Length: 232
Length: 232
Image 1 (tube, rainbow over the protein chains, first blue to last red):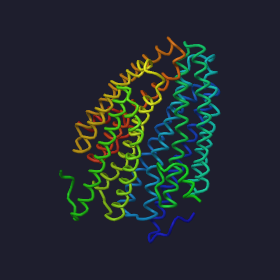
Image 2: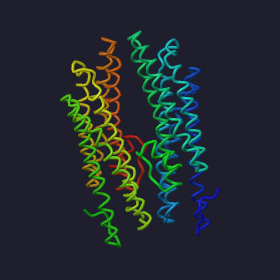
Image 3: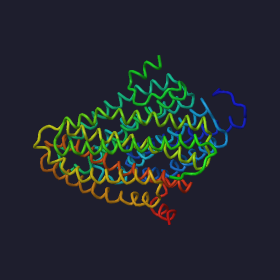
Image 4: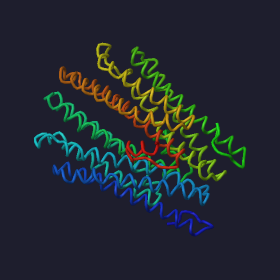
């Protein structure tokens, strides 16, 4: 893919290598979320423990990509679009790392589950988690191609995730009221639902970085309407 | 304060100006948190609405400092310690902006409070919020002086905040079980407690950036023991 010409071919190679690492990190995070959801679905504590164990890999990737970005700035003194790409990457990996933390959080719901009969409380997390994974998948795809239109689509998906989240919370509140002794466990499920809903926000952040890279405009905090206007 | 020598005096001036802006942003965020807590304490919906209204100022500062950092990288091609300072700033302002969002969240608890008699549920937020503000204040001070020891102290304070948070959650759970019809409102208070607890984590992040700047070592994800070892 063409991302601008460089005097130095080596620079290009280095930039591409960082981009590839970001996508690898994104793939790993997506897998972590997906395993966490499977573990929840099958009440598979072993798989959940694997997710917790593997979180350090996501963390290590964040640190090493950050290092690579700092090194390339110091060595290559990028400007304009190259610099925007590096800035977008530095911010993207922070969000990816936090999404990795969400996978761990969901994994703990399975690990600490009191007994199979409480599993009905967490059934509702599945469609929510599935939607979040789909958003993440699509935003990584948009990032790989630096595709504005696809980014804008993901951005809009967050409303659906929010609506699903509200429904899950209402449902869980009903369970709480029906049987207050389950409140502690249901609360843990609620924290996870909340964390999954935040995955959507983080995907939106990544969309904003894509827009920043392509359009050179920082659209954070501008709201949906302004973003739609910019993408027109 | 001495932060390294530069060939260009102008560069120094620009760097200092960015640092000053970060501290101004930090001061504003601290004020927002503090107003949000006062509003909660006095049931002052007007003050709470002011907090919500002023959040855009925090957001605007994040965007403008980020721009200044990108500009200085492109124009001055910093390396070594100067570049680390800029990287530390870019990450710090993300955390500051999110702490600003927490203030807004707490403000909404006051604004949407169903009736004064429910205020007992949110009394427990005050000591938690006070501790978080103290942590933020101290970490900003450490940032201003790039003081490792002070940063390490703030880092350790988070355990106290976590313990206070656990106590608040247990208390709120008891309220829920006693009177399930209050669950929706208590949940909102719980979300806020959670958000305040996260302020501590974000202050810890800023400590890590201070260590990164001073020591040139990325200590994220290393855990408390390793950080203690580095600071020895």
